[in-house]
Length: 160
Image (cartoon, rainbow, N blue to C red; front, top):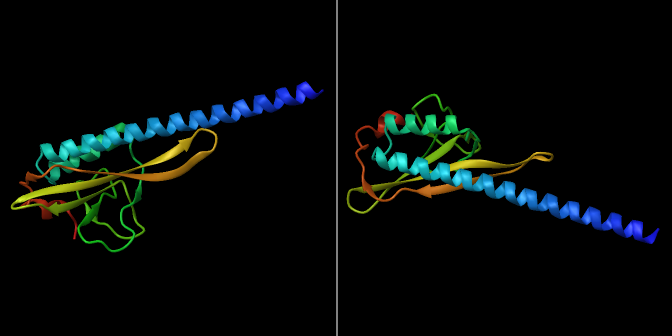
């Protein structure tokens, strides 16, 4: 009888460690996929030299077709200069409001001299098959400094 209870205890312990290991693998795969998507979005913004209707349309299509359609909150308080995408079908961005969910967020920073860079934030959820959505996370990335050609067209893609 004692060996049966001990065997059951070891089996339960093994199952717990297998589930923890599977959760860690799922988290790692989801995170690496989201980082890869973020890097592609940064490359798209750099390729089209800033925010314009072509780069935003390409970013929206890429997010839609890769299935990265998780929404998250961009700002916790009123932060000027942060824009978010409420729809992946439109090429317009709107100023981010606290508590509002967006597919991705972009903020333009003025660099040295006439260069600019952008910071983009995308979201992902830690989703386990049995438990469900465990939590949401935000991943940020920045472009390199470059001479932006979007200054004349920047106002066309953001709704004020």
